[in-house]
Length: 310
Image (tube, rainbow, N blue to C red; front, side):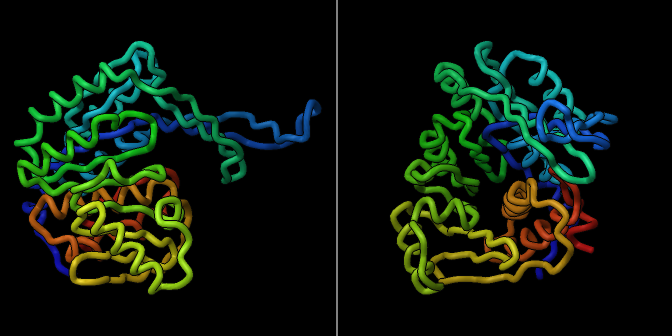
């Protein structure tokens, strides 16, 4: 496994564009069942708020030691100001477009007896005028960054991703996409997309065996003019499909505590390393290692330079 010095990582500048959210956790004790319905009564004892979505991706990049900028659209509500405050504390450069009619996405998880009992989502979709102003900001930020990372959570914040990819390509920037949905045509000409198994199946259909998977993914890669497709496969590790064939790495054997945000860690690590000059093939085993470390932590978590290169 190749390594990079801390200085090389610190010189890497990653531009993260995408859907942000505020992750709220309410922890409590469960001592009884409600008399109103057969559900547990949770007496909340502690609350916690974390960066979610693209904000967690950018947080992963800065935790590794890179410099990150975050371009996104949020509402003008309590959740957006809370999120901006959280993000600012991490040293990420924020570029928040505000849409007064937008509800900033909040994912509220209620935890009792060490497990998630319910998740409540608050969200709607941003207006296209706000998104158009984001494209101009994107253009101005591009030259100062070494890699561009699109974090698509399907919340509508990447309405102009086709134009943005075209502009990043014109400047020769590596473009990494964490995709969403069943139409990947919008990610055409990116450097690499990083779907998980369920996400990829939505696009290419079920595969019968490895050789069927191989031919379907290489077809997709050629159709979309991608350098590579990085398939994350949970307990089976990861496979990188590129012009030279396939590269497999097995999962880092460790106790899986929580898979929340593991995909964020993988793509943020890839973008940081590629931004520092590493090839996709050299970066992938390290991204796999980072994903393995983060699933051993609770909630949306991050990995430091010291943990990654220990």
